[in-house]
Length: 147
Image (tube, rainbow, N blue to C red; front, side):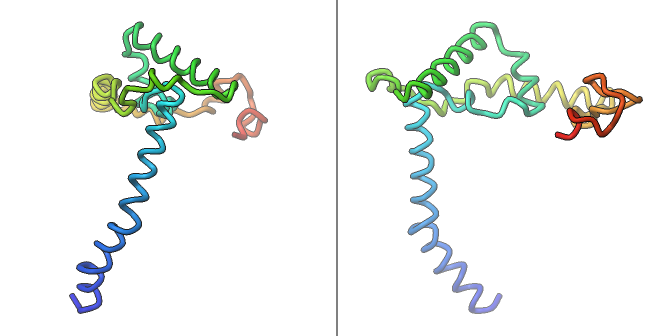
């Protein structure tokens, strides 16, 4: 390791983190927490539900948690449309609590088990196979298949 690399590792990297990267990440985190509190949602509510693991975890959710999730999403949509936010006295919760973590872990376990037993990955599925797609078209170049 030459002197330039040592200088970069010992002086520049800590300075970069303490002056720019650390405060910027903290600001982004606090901004996202404040936004979620304003709309009354949790971090897991804002997660992309099109992920194959998250899709399976959504199937494993109990009905009461599904209902709470749906109502939080509808309330957030209404706040967004009306350009308002949750009252301050109701914003006293931590939106970063991962309430879906046990279901996501169970979904990962189930998908791994399916992969080992069946040799099938969810990303192996195809929209167009055997002359037709899942939408009923017979051409690979149909409008619905272009996305």
